[in-house]
Image (tube, rainbow over all chains, first blue to last red; front, side, top):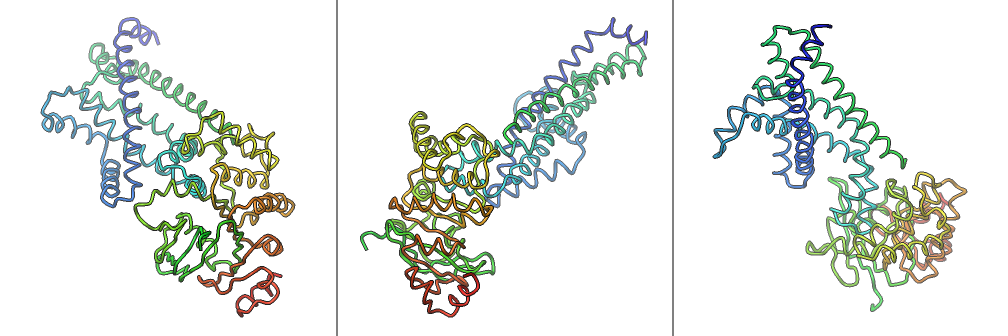
Length: 219
Length: 244
């Protein structure tokens, strides 16, 4: 315990920097992953066979391979593919976003499919355009179905950012490694980082539960 | 033929191998109230749903005011705005208030100013006795109230035709009357109405014409008195003997 306090006193800046890294990488991954996930879900449900099977393959490949492999793949492959310089951090973030989008798209698709068929028909029968039907009738109802599963996925995403430490991208797990290398105090440093991760996810899940409660107020 | 509003010409619909509509040809005149009766699975609902393209016909043609609606170039949303539909299961939008249910489409698709849409919606809601529920969510409504709301939601778009697909079949018996009364009022307003129903007494009372649809075709059509008192087709006779 004293050693933990000692570590915190001496290295709190390292942990704070790590926390900041985890926070922004998580936020970007969750945000961009959700947007991309929406797009993939839209493709998956489109009437075009080509787009449909593209999205299907995208999801299967990303779900069927380890995330660590994907990180390596993008870390090595992306700089070779792109004509401009890309930092390690950006490669990893892109990989995390793409990985998250596959899972999120499936969650969104399931949520949309769970909306009663009668709602689609009613929306169409009053002459709503497809876009208005989605934004005003289907998605608001789908979001309610989705939220618990999405909360899970967001937490998985936050924890998944720890894999970035393999590439020494600045985040919490990397902070652990730095401190451990400097002090040889592995367990203590792990405990500190673990508590931070736990608190982060605890707060996140509470916030999402609050949102869930507000959204279900109408039924 | 000047007052024709809907005409179907050998309308067919198949779901995979199953042919539900085997060629239906009929003409609906403006202001006419037409009841569609027949056994379950005979194609009544499918026929109605083909008229506003909730189902895409697989054969034949449907004309609305002379325009072929099976034409790919048709603006489906615009067309559907002139044809209201009421469903068996109400299908009111649970995520918005009663008032928003009614004003949603007029505001979004007809670009009606919000205040005007609300005013018009309240007039309609008052007509069916739901004005004081305007700011409630549908979960607080009874089945009969939900169905009246669904009718108002369709009427708010000022359609030229109203399609009713078994509007009272999912209601508790004591609520059937309040919904039928609303529909009855509507028949007196000169609206063109097609109603699929199992309420034979009601069909007899309000209709100008009754279609008996069975096995995907119109087996018999005529005035309510003719159909209900002296049906000619054996299948009509059999059906009526079972339900009356």
